[in-house]
Length: 178
Image (cartoon, rainbow, N blue to C red):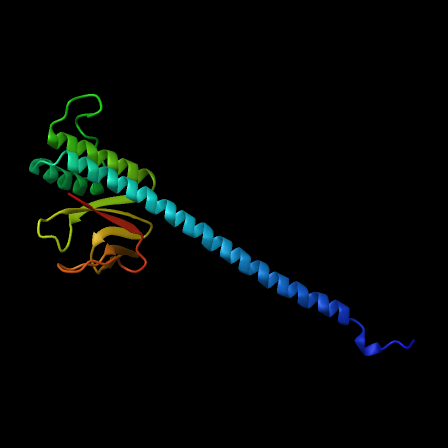
């Protein structure tokens, strides 16, 4: 049998091509797994944000006097600028509606802050009765309603008096509280 000299190394070349194809397939699988992990983390953040917003909204519904709602707004606005401890611990002592509002806001703020989230409360756009919306944001999203961006952060929503929409790329949850 006569050996063909120009076919030497063809088997090695076949193996290299097969390894290249295998490497591309593995890289695709790794990218898919990375995206799945990111989606899982995003889902976990949304669940935590919804729980915080729902908890605060339920407390607002229970403590729904006009003075208490104003206290929720005032305390939530000041909580984002400074984390002050409320004067009364409502777990151990009786609280008036405004003190309970301050305590509830402090609890929600601490819970959100411990997992890297930020709270805010704004008047819901498009509502005739001026209902309040609880904003919970994380990542590079500010819990605001605006078109402007500040220091690399984007606003959660962009809404007018008649329409409401989330900004592209925002990571936040908005819950109406009444």
